[in-house]
Amino acid sequence: MKRVKILVSGPFASGKTSLISTISEIPVIRTEKVVTDETKQVKYQTTVALDFGRITIDENLVLFIFGTPGQERFSYMWDVLSVGAVGIVLMVDATDYKSVIHAKRYISYFLPRLKVPCVIAANKQDLSGALSPKQIHKMLSLDDSIEVIPCIATQKESVKTLLIKMFEIVDHLGLVKEEDYDFPQNSKTPI
Amino acid sequence: MELAGNIKDFSVIEICQFIWISKRTGKLMLHLEESGRRFESSLFFATGSITASFTDIMKGKDAFFAICEAESGSFRFIGDEMSAETNIITSMDQLLLEASGRIKLYETLRREIPTPNIVYSISPDFNTYNLVFDRNQWVVIALVDGKNSLGEISKELGLPEFDVMRIFYSLLQVGVARRLAIKIPQISASGSTEKKSIISKIIDYLRGL
Image (cartoon, rainbow over all chains, first blue to last red; front, side, top):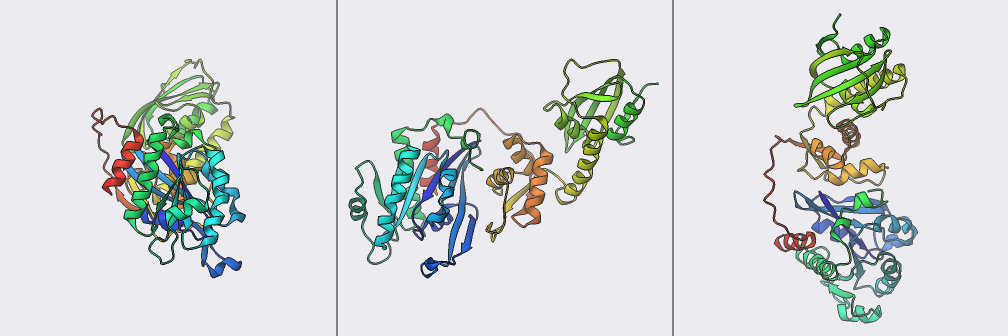
């Protein structure tokens, strides 16, 4: 069986867990803790190790979706989780200016290390005051090779569109060979 | 005196103990059945101690433990036959002790997991925040999808069924997994799969969701 892995990352409260929950065929395996620091005003629980979801494509192919912790003090998990991923979805809360700025750090962390396609998801587009993908693209000073895609992490159609776009880029760029997809054999990740 | 019979009358451990005490050299041939699977295996002895063990898919200690866990089958001892390969170097008393411990554990596991054809799913309210899993547990959790049976997961991972049963047992104990159904094994029709790139398959699937 081939196992393809993608990574969902992004700042705290940007909607990573929601996105995985929306698309995963299994109840998402979450490692959430009650927030005890000042960020509890934003969100009651936060991911401390990983979120894990899966989609069975057919009997020989499974897509694994890993979500990284949003709080930077759990960033030691980023390296561990990113090994073997074929693409990254970087979530930003489009209604939160700070979240967008914060995403720069994620971009500069992941892109040089992984060298796999990345799409930015401009989440919470259903809320008033959300920045448009174009505005976010400009704020992050991205080059044209990185797309910012509108997203509503709680809506299946929106998540589908986002993932299809990311896989189209993966397919188009052809950076990862098919024999590398079966990540558990090749990776040093705990999973 | 020929040493032959059925393992329902003498367990494999009892037979090994007998060969050990009588310090025999030779090969113990076994035709075994476990969870509906029939397989042939052999144990080689040198002056009572096991030097090599083989089943159709395993060798060494793993093979020996699998032989000890077989439910039914027959055995025959052929004297003076030696193995060219030595794959067990553990002392006989240690080996038998380990095997006995595993069999006891196996019986406990079997009460909870009577067949490897059981399909499990992840419990809907499961949250791992206060649990610590090791690598093998995570690998198994990743394949628990409500479709694959325990036996299929074992094959997929290339891990012995016993080890996967033990992992499932631990997951069941903490409420991570729950039993869904018992799957009747089917012979898959292969050879007609469409040749398509992996990414195209994923894209097509997502479009159809």
